[in-house]
Image 1 (cartoon, rainbow, N blue to C red):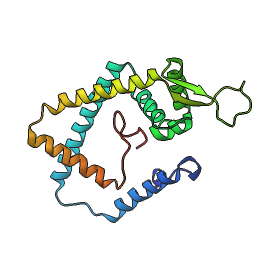
Image 2: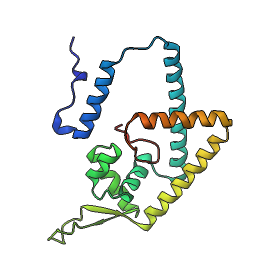
Image 3: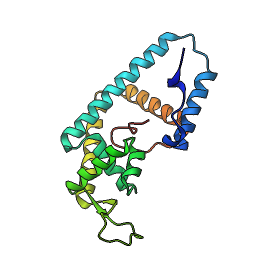
Image 4: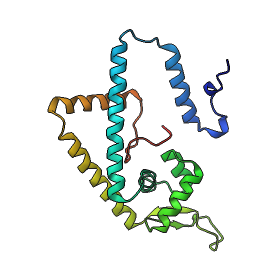
Length: 193
């Protein structure tokens, strides 16, 4: 039986660090044996499903209150953190290049991003290819972060002290388990993760 889905994508389509992460995950899967406590595994699966549902509700709340989709908010965050080209935005947010280009163009049209030329561009009549965040975009990011914290506070108030501490420990364990510092962004990790 063919398992072509197990083969990595062609090297030219995947960045080296992404290939390394996939390779590391495959190695872990191949070198571990299933545990005997399947009830704990199923419980973890249910817990992660509930956390995912809570994350989706949080994202939906931020999207509804800001009027921006998650990809647009992640794009603003990426540009605010230094991404200045739609391809860089695509890599950081997990979007396809074409989707990131469309998202950037939409945010430019709405005045949240603005275009500028590369400093070495000699033809000033050429369409500027680089982007930067505008004051309006900065204000939207601040507003969306405030909304996110307000929604998180509302969710946190529904938990008891021990439940909230358990959630923090679980989140810390997952973060440490990745072996790397995750970028903070609205809605969690990029779509490609």
